[in-house]
Image 1 (spheres, rainbow, N blue to C red):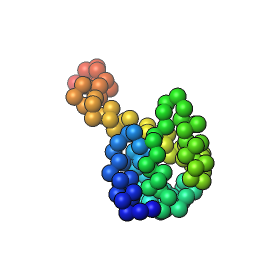
Image 2 (image 1 turned 120 degrees about the horizontal axis):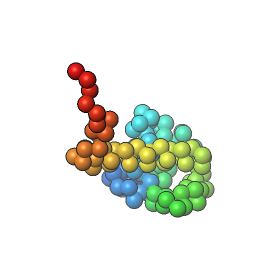
Image 3 (image 1 turned 30 degrees about the horizontal axis):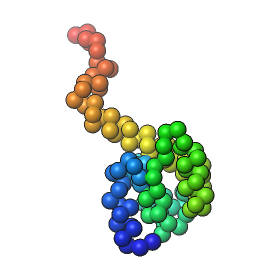
Image 4 (image 1 turned 135 degrees about the vertical axis):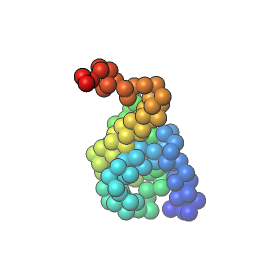
Length: 116
């Protein structure tokens, strides 16, 4: 891949519109660098930028969307599905924690007074 595409793929890791977002969350949680992520997905490291720049799957068509990406780039579909689901779940938790911290939802476990 070109340096420009690599740079763009790096910049969109925080944008949920791109596949880069859940893949970055997954890689971070699993402690994977680009080489390990590429190996897990079944593609060369040079192909990761193109994969990351694909649109993230839509909720109603996750399997079809990821099947198209896997076929286009020769990825292991099951590994891609697992990575994207895991990464998307972590992203939702991270965003929920940011939004919910001020809303008090984390206090639910402490609703009752503890005996003294």
